[in-house]
Length: 235
Picture 1 (tube, rainbow, N blue to C red):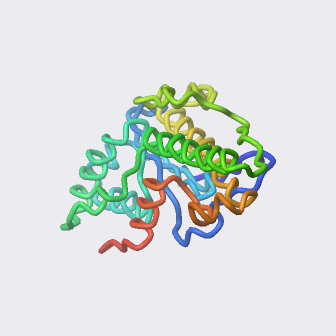
Picture 2: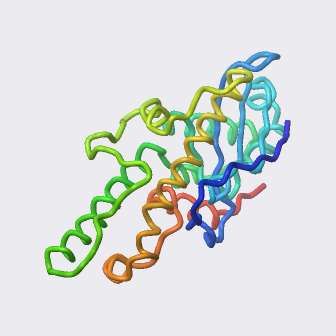
Picture 3: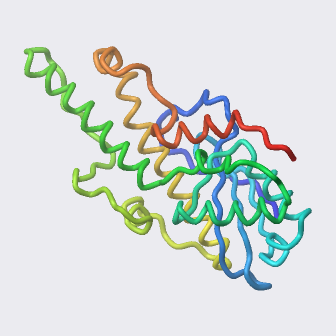
């Protein structure tokens, strides 16, 4: 199955416009109408869903051609899942089925939505401290205000906590499709929250001078995207 979708606009400019890499891929395992399946969704650096595929696990983990097709769809993309640690097992099985003798290239391309959210919280705290220092120095500077504000202690350790924070509902469809879609929607939300955070640099020169230009994605996610974008596979 293949599909192309777009996401609604949230009223501010997305900072992830010049990444120079294809983006990310979300992997999910679960039940489909015909049995156990593997779902794979492509997500752009802007957080929009750009393509979707679903294969039966019998094909994906037994057919060399199907496994090679799936590995090809992962090429040059950062990788994640509800449980990012599961990505390693899935890709390892696909690579073995595809009969690709290669180093574990995918390990440096895996990123965690939970870590990305933690980086957003850290970045906000740093910018707030910079603004406070400017105010303490006697300059006129309004405190930072966020469309969505989070307590410093609210960084979830599990994906379900991120889903609740983002107010992402459970989606309709088969279990494997619903699983992939929820992760995609959380990623889109993370991009929006990150973009709002980084846009402080565009509005306040002293924040940009102190911390550099706006970055496209949270550091660990951006590193995975850039690592993946430079990695060509022997397909």
